Length: 183
Image (cartoon, rainbow, N blue to C red):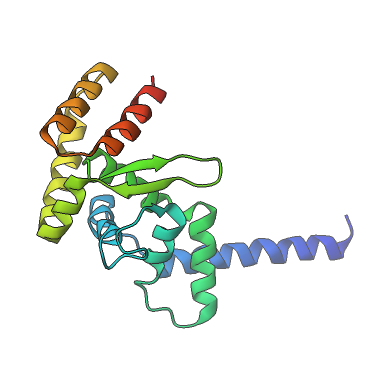
């Protein structure tokens, strides 16, 4: 291999390592339960789309807006890393919110998933950060000890939530489809 190609390849590798290091330094993620609690605010009236469904990209950008970057390059580096796999903690936080029945997956496409807050989630959000944190905390601590529920049990639980008026018919249909797809 010619010397020029090798040095260019080494330069790209070093630039990538530098960007990874900068991302890790700037984006110091808290525990997933804390991210989930903070992320729930994005679904409220002060969120990026004022209570409307959000994509993972909307949530990544909302999360980035919370940071004070020293320059534009730093923001570009962090945004790029979040899109290319560094957004794992945000995706994990969405899963925690879903297990806590605060959000649900509305639409799943090849391009991007769309998440919506449930009525329970909006109610917890209206009650404040502590209500969201309590609900998230119950699911995080309780989910590790409990056995996974069967699809039949989850469908029965979903029917109970709909009967009680905790979720709408649209939320019920979307979540039911999600459970059935997982069988």
